[in-house]
Image 1 (tube, rainbow, N blue to C red):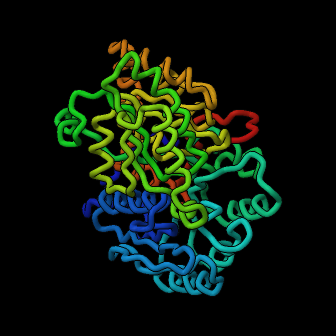
Image 2 (tube, rainbow, N blue to C red):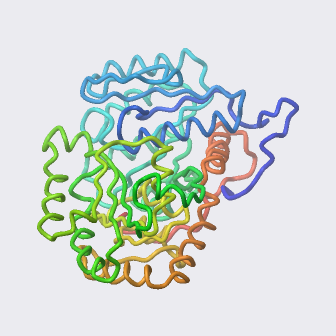
Length: 414
């Protein structure tokens, strides 16, 4: 079972005796600005740190003809819109005697309809493939359905970040349950640091926090609408929104969404209680902001959202979390690890924030339950579970693998 804890130092060299030694990851990578890039960067780094003599490197996807100043871990680049580039990438991987390829899948980062250029690469590979599915749709269109079915067929293992995601792979795409591993989204360690409020210029403030790339489906306007009622009770509250506008949104619409949020705050007279940090931050900066958050909010508007790195970070960091009920939030915040509020309901957001600021015991109990759950989400633990999945993909495990928890019989969508 995925939740097991095998001895990962079971030979004289200190290398896991079962685990593949040469691992290639395909996905976005920092400094490209997106959640997949952050995830691939963190996962590859965690695996390299977990097994010091492993060779873990990245094949990076480039968008819209762009090039990035990648670190040495990125050894090959694929042009998203050039199908020939996928063929050359496959040749590169085959020539380098890779033990396993870890694919970070999101429809939008690969070229072709529903990202089907990826299939050209996968079909040519001569080593096991493990695919992490970052978006799992309950009602995919015909192209998305065919693409995911083929990815599932070509992959030895599929990784979902939630039980609902695993259920969709099984129910919608027919993936056998024993081919799916449930591995949570990884998070960094966030130490408590009370002096960070002073350093960030918000000493003495109650801090509501949201971070991530901005786009209109984030629903931040509904937290802004809640601020007047919150400030009436707790005038020393500040709402910090950290993150650049999503690059694709910025290309098409500029800063329209961010500017609309700023105008909204001004119209409500709460602009002095809002801080917009319009930049894509490093992990160190993000950890510093997370450490000072009293309440974390994800007011997202997409009920089918299958995962959220930002929510994973907040829960794993032991924050008091308020969220709309997209299915990933419903699963991650179950058992008292957070509070769900209705969609687009500023009044309820305000009521819950005031209640948590008024009741330290209740807020700290939420934090404690979240922190306990977060221990298994720290990157070293997540990296070990990926190594287990890679080992299964290479056929080195004798017992039949099982996913981390029982799947629901039916699931409509994420």
